[in-house]
Length: 426
Image (cartoon, rainbow, N blue to C red):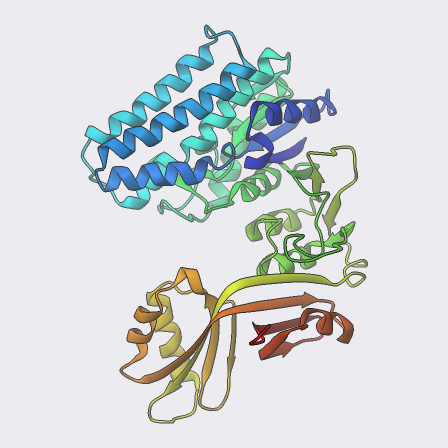
């Protein structure tokens, strides 16, 4: 059995969904577990719906839902013109239930409503695509990921209960392949001990594919993207990108950790644990080879990879009493940062100062300064860029520093990380 994952860009329109069907047809007779994300930018749209529900903005709530209805119905009518098909009733029921939430009491945490509502994007996309595949003669079965993936009792960014999840797949999914060739399910979604819907974190559909492969002992996972494979840099920021034909699990984890956006960071580990290869292939040119991620490390060093993180904020934190930055101060600083759920992209300390780099758009700088003002002085630089180069040499570093001022640099044997600002006057 193989696992496929199709993201939002690959199912954003009726034409795109027909293309997905054509890719599936290339694997006729094989057993496929297919993970599908919400269509296009639906997740963002459902987040707006959640906000209007929690703020009790009824007119906006209804308007936003009507926009989602129109979006999905337009795709559905183009794919399945017969409005007597049961899928129309299913979609109508889902949206009617969503509208009814407005008149129900808000008696749960915001995270509960987030997971319950935002997950509808995946449910809608998979139901529509499954109905289309059946119409086109595919042997396809829709399955709820919320009945298969057990998580902790946390609604958002929930961790997996692996033992229970493996048991659910063995009992409720694997036997279905005796009846059908294709099982279609949702990315990003799980359930807790009470059967309530939970979510695995934004971009968690890749992780879902990894979970399925791990629990079912799959032959491979293929993530279908709008790029020819994993590239050594984001083409939005870098000219003359090169496709990485083959990299190791370790290299993929390193690149994901530093911010490469092609593979979700959590995806790799469950595959590595069972030595299941991961392919990144193009849904535009599906017959091309793409990238393979596996246990072989021999090609990792051949091509340098570049990762650029924009809009970075560099904070330097110094004790007011000029004491050394030791274990006690570091423990205190980390505890304060944790209280605001601050995620650190890079850190470095000197004798009397501790510096961290964070995403500027994910923090309130005034709250951060206020958090430390009793015992520490805080200085900061904004609008910075973090450049990470895997398998660097002097030439690759120089190439990235044209018209840049270096504020901080860290070099290890394999990785260069450099915080830069644009030179003034350029």
